[in-house]
Length: 294
Image 1 (cartoon, helix red, strand yellow):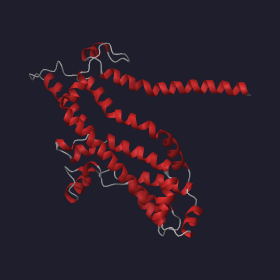
Image 2: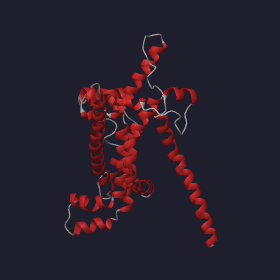
Image 3: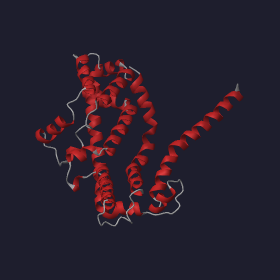
Image 4: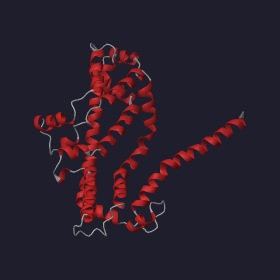
């Protein structure tokens, strides 16, 4: 029996090593391609070890370093503010409908679920946000549309609260004289760290990777987030290459058109790689408990 367990552990470790390699190698491949000389990429193709190291793609991106730094700062601000606002609204929505004594609980839950199936569409949403709420070219345009509230997150948190917060704990707090606000802050939130951490990671990734809101609602350079800015750089590069191929007198010999795509991906994912390890231990636990129980 002991030998069988040791054999299983060895094979399990081998499988995990291969799985880790499959996760890490694409990132190594991405970074290696981003620092490979443009002509070497075209001649030899992509490889894990750069044949000719060249940082032209990063120099091109950082040509206007002030704008890039501003984009990173704006993305960080939007991610932090948007994540906090999203978690606040999600908690304030999920906690009441998780309580069995709430009048009309099922009706509210039905309308919440209904929004996951049907929506007004892109054009009505654009008209509403720009002509009714007037958020175009404001910071709110990067925070509110499509990202500030998610019915899926509310349902996920409600399921977690229903399955993991005993009613007896809430009843005991009421007997001690605690009100609903105090119960939420002192009892519910400390017991909900796994699901809050999971949602914070998912929402934060959504805000950090979002470029659609900037595309639709922003046309001022000072309000470009890093994703919008990198997307604009990529489109500008593609435009220059297309113009040169059509006979226009544009020198694109020093333009890292291929490597810049890799460099943009590296710069976009780098902050996520730094933050993810600190929240990873909560991710699997929060998703498993929040999605299965209840």
